[in-house]
Length: 301
Image (tube, rainbow, N blue to C red; front, side, top):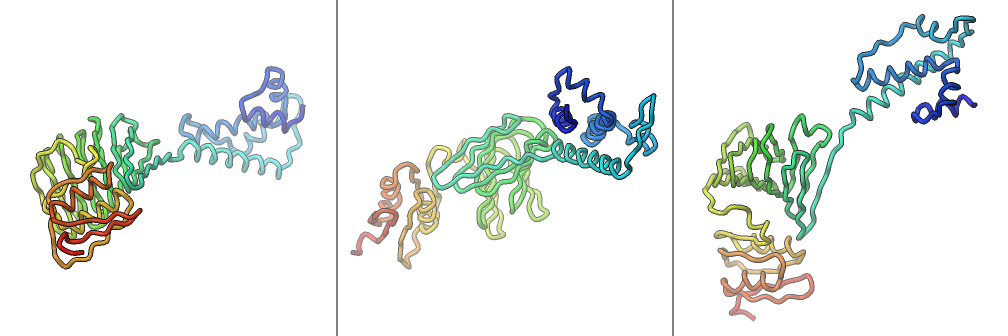
């Protein structure tokens, strides 16, 4: 049998009984087996020792005769062994990064390796290293997500504006533009930002916006967006229109110097009803045309 054929099948652990005997009869069979030992050394699964050069020479001899060694070939074989070792090491130690993203009007439920649940809101991204999850429950978030964390080791949510740390609880994180908001619904979370640590217990919300931080009480049991609602408490109307644009992928045109503030909510699954919910309490009218909405004061044409 051809040597190359046998070596390829040996690498794939696919030798038949007859092929195995032919492989063991190869002059370099012992060297190939040593390659496996070197690979195990790189993987960390077995303590191994690289043979001295004179021992390598003895491995390539038989009891009856000494093989004439081609030193260049031997050096090439050693280099091949090291390359295989590094390749195995790289494969066994390669990080597996899981990445998730959402677009407009899209939510996504993600189950983490420890059965913690993440509900990812629209226009958000989340990633974590699943191959090292047992060592460190750490993930990166951009956008907004609701977390229901299983108890266990420390759980870190890293954002561009700060890190939220818990052991097991339910909380919501928003990290978008200049807004960083952490709402705790159960348990206790720790928020770290700008070398400052803030404890946020259940029923409390921490907000950092444009460098100014506040902490207030809440009365809801979970974020409204999970129930397909956007709720506002005395929010300037232009911010409400911005949320409408994101939720429905539309363009809102509103030209007015009058500053209006909105208290209320709109739903996420019916644009016309959402527009009525926002405009009617403020005595505004709207005209919807494909992906564009024109908002005017009711007393104007």
